[in-house]
Amino acid sequence: MASSMKFTDCSPSAIVRLVPSTRTRLRSFSDGAVLFHRVLGRSCPAYPRTFVSRSSISTLPVISASISTEATAQVIDGKLVAKQIREEITAEVSRMKDAIGVVPGLAVILVGDRKDSATYVRNKKKACESVGIKSFEVNLPENATEQEVLKHISDFNDDPSVHGILVQLPLPKHMNEQNVLHAVRIEKDVDGFHPLNIGRLAMRGEEPLFVPCTPKGCIELLHRYNISIKGKRAVVIGRSNIVGTPAALLLQREDATVSVVHSRTKDPEELTRQADIIISAVGKANMVEGSWIKPGAVIIDVGINPVEDASSPRGYRLVGDVCYEEASKIASAITPVPGGVGPMTIAMLLSNTLTAAKRKHNFQ
Image (cartoon, rainbow, N blue to C red; front, top):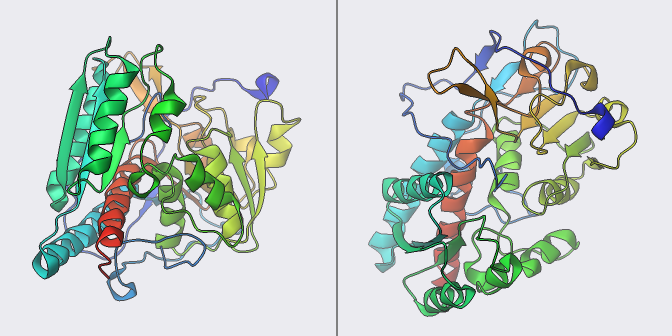
């Protein structure tokens, strides 16, 4: 795919924003859950849905993955959907506390002094507070040993007030990431990275306890906008353990015909152009150009890439993997960057934490 990967300077263009009828004003919050370095619904029997009853789910207008007659794509608004989900989680957390006196708890372990990682942890803590979930935080220095991290994980594994454990990635190079992630008990693996969870996701007839947050958020966006997945041709660009692979597995569970584009794929442009649904999580700024996209396709852009921009006070702006200016004139619907998948990642983390607490206490 390297020969097909090139940067295109795509400037933001005017688009039609698709939002549900609502009088609720949006609160602005950070897209901190979509990571530079860690790219990491409707009730469906294929994977655990979590937190709310059918009657309380807000769905958005139907978007058809067919050829669009409109000049521009409609926006799949991740901020708005995440806000709806947070409100639903807040109500469920309150109901659980009132009924059985239990408050869900999430523990986060941060190693080192990376500013981006510290920002992500801070955003997760604020998100927990906003919905009534207790947060526990451990900050370790860069030179901490792997055994120190494992000791904290063991303590949280044994703590009944902690229902979910998240180890902020990346870890320092002297630590074995897999050893650390595998130490988290599967019933507290709210990140969904334990090999048993991924293995169950891959097997028909098996159900994972948790689904990784970012791919789960991608599918949730499709559900909330009533975008049909069954029988559609889907292409996932990227095959990481964090996003690409689980996203492909989730689409298969939804009865899509799935292809995965990766660095060894021949003619990725032609393969992608056949897709009704595209999920891109490769981390290449504006790699997916308009020529890659079938008219009327639905695009979920997971990528978040900083590119130089002298006109920005920060000296850079954030763009996705998909050339937004071109794609918005061809696709029927698209997630913006930022403001698309990012807010959903944290919302799904909160959802998984609530699920862990409800499962632990057999609370329906």
